[in-house]
Length: 195
Figure 1 (cartoon, one colour):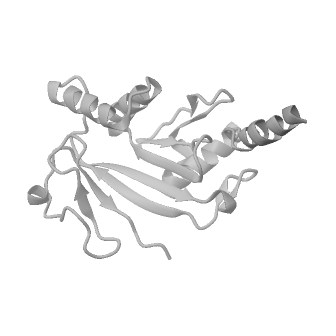
Figure 2 (cartoon, helix red, strand yellow):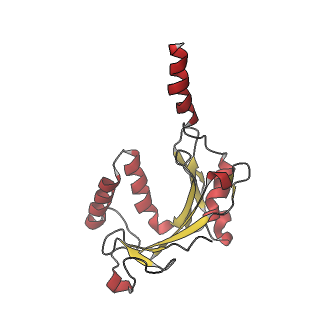
Figure 3 (cartoon, rainbow, N blue to C red):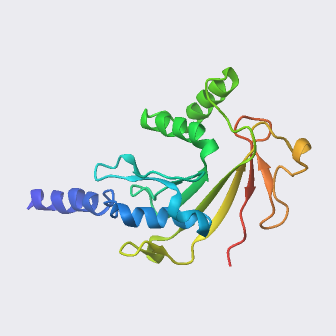
């Protein structure tokens, strides 16, 4: 009886909270591209997850956006699309994550590489679209997400409040502001209020 209790108490909850299996590639592509402007969705490059949980290219693209499908190991739904000018920066971040580097170490490494010129940063403002929502509002059969919420990030390396005229924190809901000013990862944040 003790062995059965062990199975029910320890192993059964672990099964419940195990990584959810990725949805089929075509559904991942459909959901990932919801973050892109509608006229660009059919021709974006899309990364998604295989059955081993590895991030792989699901579709090559022909325009200037790269989209990332929802990570099945994380709670909720979150997809994003970004300018291909950000690909070296984003790809390096993914590589460092795969190597097990913690967030602050990843930031330091990319900062050093940006400063020594080995990591290419965008030479002009570069857009990122992020769409998130709850699993309850997601249909894994169709790839549709109801009541998703957008936020927008415009990378502008080394920009400051002085160079942009933007505040370093928002003082009204939904207004643009600059985060990490003066650094390699300086970016304008725009988070529209939820309806």
